[in-house]
Image (cartoon, rainbow, N blue to C red; front, top):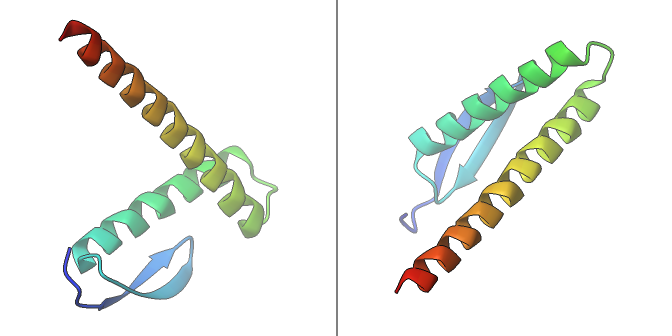
Length: 84
């Protein structure tokens, strides 16, 4: 990651966002595409939700996955530590 600020415009769930940060533009586009796909999947399963509620539900699902992966990672570190 560089100190250079990159700016890229992405579309997430029908809305355009001009994003600026230290992350490479390709990475920002990849993240936006993943979020767009996840929000569309959430919307398809919950037809009556507003876009805001779809965004929050999607964020909660991603946070849950993150915490599960973090826990799995910590458990793997413990297993590796025990094997040494």
